[in-house]
Image 1 (spheres, rainbow, N blue to C red):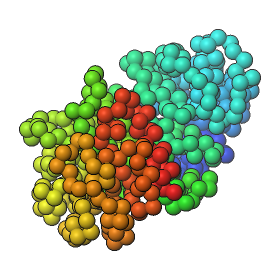
Image 2 (cartoon, rainbow, N blue to C red; image 1 turned 135 degrees about the horizontal axis):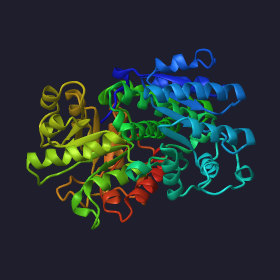
Image 3 (tube, one colour; image 1 turned 45 degrees about the vertical axis):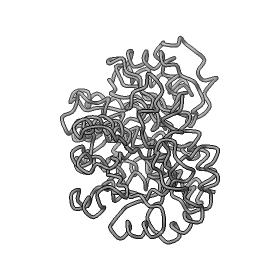
Image 4 (cartoon, rainbow, N blue to C red; image 1 turned 30 degrees about the vertical axis):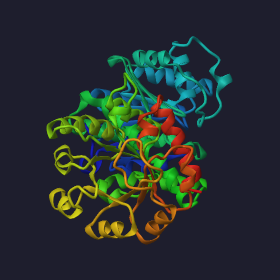
Length: 485
């Protein structure tokens, strides 16, 4: 299930630290939840009982706040209200260690989210790792370098009964009850440049759990947690791209861009569409997949590597088969908040509810597709020169795929090579995103620098790779260095 928080409007009781409280509340508001932060002992339990979820953040603890945490936590447990624990600074002091030990004993948490050092410290506090000297290894609440093992995540989940979210260069989600361990996108390295990025993630998890509770989906909390983390991390990556495109590389520019990107989740896919979506556009080809990997797994690996948009391209399927395949791929894309574009087939796009459709010059016209799909769907079009680009723009295309840049291994009928001058001519005269396609690799994409492109569309260098995730990650890094310079 996907959650539209702007329709559900869950209310979250946030007991957070005073250092990051403003950012945490704004993060909740940006995704469509409402937040209240009452932390007086005389009213905290009553506030909790009128909310859809509770977030307990231990960043600025005290004996008095521990009483508040326990009062609200126990009341939430009585009413079946989901709770997120963010154990900020776990293991830093004896008091924090004792406080967390008591909280874990007295309150059942739905989710525990911390950086890897905090999760490691909780494992020690819970006796999973033995009584380690975690204070000697504590390196601050922004630490993301400590390694926490899969078995430790699942053991902590089993001991606490909570879903564990360990964030660092990647995010691991573990649930012992279903023997589930997921890897989710790592977001952006810029998240560690300001304090509170993790606190914001915890608050957004609380918002999504509140939405699940309000919708009666209490048996689907793992999916809500996954959705929350994915939305946050994908938009963290989008915010980094935005800052690099706009040459706004300061810390506060990034933090504001992150909240801005999260707030755009209130818009439909077409309204949100920008060059951030088309920056690394991965187009599927099941014929070149290595043996043993399914189409859906390959799409997931591409997204984990940093693909910003996926196009499903199937030329030899019946409409019924195409729809079945598209439903499965769209489920993967939606779980990561990544738009899925259907190649050529407007009917498949409409039935599946994908983000949009891409049309070649020999396919249905953009105007006819718009009449069928309506105003909310993305429609991309192919062009090879300025005249074709202008025609597509006039018909209402939302972005253009232009090529072939360097020929094509997968499309034998590809048009002749598009010159660099043609790319520059199109981007100088066309206001919508323009994507280069055709034979693009990590070795040649540097030739596309300075042409005004919004991104690159790649088939073989992603889906033909032995390691799809790592190849995609490498391509994205090279594209950042070359396309955005």
